[in-house]
Image (cartoon, rainbow, N blue to C red; front, side, top):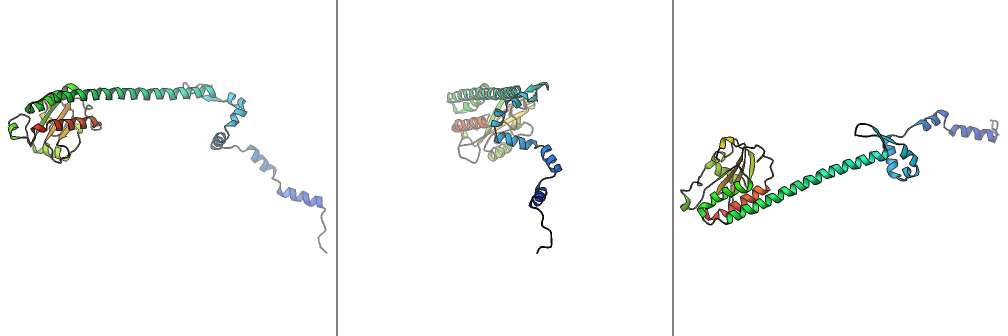
Length: 251
């Protein structure tokens, strides 16, 4: 026989229920706890129908606008955001159109420059024609070039100069170089060299050759005209075409 008195079933159930039931403080904490902003955002993303089912909430939302700090409805704020996005897209489109227009002009100038070179048939006159066309077609304030490794018949021409510094520079660079004029080889060849603030240096060589046969120098009093970060795609084309056109002079 059990030594303990038997407890009525109802009392035992009540004790069991009381042991498992949350306390009043637990219930209070559960009812008063607030979800954080991230949890709300995740819930709305996962349940987009919530706002459709509760249109009164949407209508009652009031937000601060970026324009003047006044309070507006959610719909007005959305319109404001869309307008801002449209403005940004319009600015990008305008920039693209400006770039496209600028590129079209550059290609037209390059075409005209090439045609002028092709019309000169006297080899000894090619360097002067090249410099003249470059200044005219691309509005370059100052330009010049010097050649070496030329045929003997051109030895007395003004454009011949076997400058060790310039030759070493050209041999060591396969692409045009832009930057400040100070200390750059060939800068002193330019007319009014003292006023030049930026230069573009174009090494001239036969296609595929390691050794150069000349250096073309473009100068400007504007320090940004040939800034060091300038894209050199067009200058590279000028360099290639000029190198090819000057071949009749090269030994």
